[in-house]
Image (tube, rainbow, N blue to C red; front, side, top):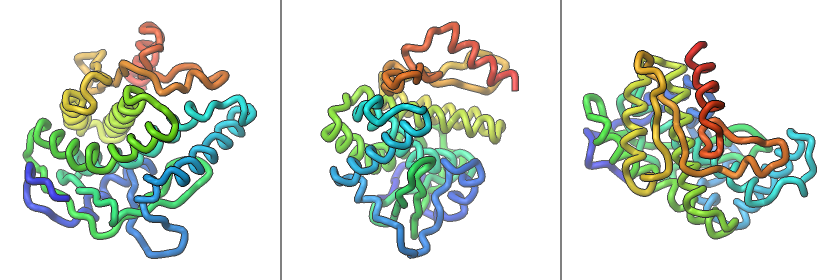
Length: 266
């Protein structure tokens, strides 16, 4: 799936390597052909995502000291989905920002490995990337939305919506949350790229299917650090003791600003 909005295609390996240095959520590793890797397309199968959500539900119960019955299936599904789309979006955004090339994901060149918790391992083989050096945020946002949000993530959104009766607002809000989280981690890890990553995400939030789901806020005009504020919720608050996330629409504004200040004071 090429992008005619950007420059010529190159090997995605080097820019994905640059993205991986930001941490495990940004890492797509080279596929080595070893046993244990499963085609990414399996994550569009109802029985596979049902099994993944059940594993996540049990892990959440273990981590929180709750029982499986305390954690609703829909709530677990929303949280598992958020973690999954973070793994699909973060490396692409980071590669475009720090490597000046946008990886073009192709489902049949991607694999995943099941784990009980933490970031799902993802491996790729033979991906190309479109040169985006010197391109403006609008152009990159349009290409990233078309190739990754629409091409890779949207089919997974539909599967989770059908299987777990999650609303599109919750699911697309989770996608926006994943992008906001990635932009924040890029800003904290490589501050010189904070403005570009925020500009790309802000443009993506103005495009369908993410328009209306969230916005980026810059609380300190002297600092190149933006924070996402959702217009919806991931349902985590429904888990006993869960509370609300920093970007949640339900988080009181005073609490949110205290959290922002804590980050800005580091």
